[in-house]
Image (tube, rainbow, N blue to C red; front, side, top):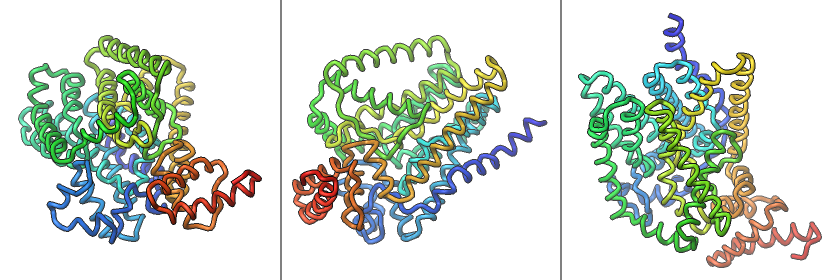
Amino acid sequence: MMREKLTRWFPWALLLICAVTYAGLLNNEFMIDDSAFYQGKTFDSHFKRPSDYLAPEGIRHFYPLYLYLNITKHRLFPDNPPAHHLINLGLYFVVCLLFYNVIYRLSGDYPTAVMASIFFCIHPINADNISHTDITNSLLSGALMAATFFCLLRYVNDRSKRSLYWLGVFLYSVAVCNGEPALLFPLYAFLLLFVAKNQNLRDSLKLAAPFFLIAAAVFIIWMNFYGPSNEAAKGLRTLNVNGIEFLASVFYAILWYTKNIIYPGPIFLIHNFTPVKGGAALLLFILLCAGSGLVIFLIRRWGRTMKSFALLWFCAGFIFVLPASLAHPSMGFVLEPYWLFFPTMGGVLLLSLFFVELRRQIDRRLYIILLVAIIALFFVRTQEKNYIANNEALYAYHWLKASPGNLIAGLILSSYYEREDVDIDPELIPEMTRMVEIFYRTGTYDRAEKLNEKLIKVMRQRGAPP
């Protein structure tokens, strides 16, 4: 009886947790990846007909709903950042609630489902995602894929509910129009069926087949009409790395992300990493092989269990990082946390499973202290993220310090320094000097001169030669 009451009331508790954690975001200014969405700007002016969203000129991504959702939001609420934040926060709550229901239905263990959904809800790696007003597509995609998981679980438990299965297929066909990371969902669905639900291989492949077909069709359209493979090949040539250096550099980015799941540090929209070369590359490649061996060992030891499913769900998401890390070669290798929004659920689930097991192995008071400490860590770091995301200039300032050489952060911050009557932070002189060089190289001389004047002023104040 008590468990039924808790199950009934937990969604309301989760809503309260979500509201308390992210209420501060509602007062923040626009945090937007692409200013072309603003009313009257490029996207708003050019996208008039439905076909415009399918074949936009100069865009190498297949994400019609990303364009449609954000253009529509800016047309409905052109000067109202709280409305955009509220829409995203509402979608995020739906994702967290669906995640809770999926894990509860999958494991039947209330503490695991509660812990996983709370960890996911308050984690700062997600706080950065929802601080950007144009991330609506990733949140919607996550909600639709989590809902598809729920439909699959309901159908597997009761095969008479065939309509739920096809509803899941439909939901995925919508989800994949929100961005390329959803192309990996068929693999997640197969892992859910084969590993977590212990279905036989034939049934698992059969049930996952429609998802693979949809993903294959979208992938073919993406490759043939948008040309991302050419961009990836160009990026590989620009970075000038061999196979071992490429894998080592990607593994370094993966290690960075994994570390931030367990102990969050500075997390921003795009993190760039210089290519790993020489002896460091060889060492990281050896660690990659050892890490892969460890994952295989753990899967064999755990068998087809929740822990194996959580680990594989999390690791499978990194497949997307391999080609996507070449997206911005001028900045080095890159990793954008929103790529891993859905598979991060697997990482958080694995962390929760370990905590639930730990409860039976250590003193109860020590366990409570550890649990409160990790929740407090996630919550405090999320509040820091909410504060940093107050406006683009403040965000870019911290972003550039955490990720030197980031061109997007440099452009945002240089625009701020050109526009406002403030001095350049002395710590950012090298980065702003780099932006001056870029402006001169690209022919934007007015911007170069304005920024250079401010650099000279700051350097003279410090007694350094301009």
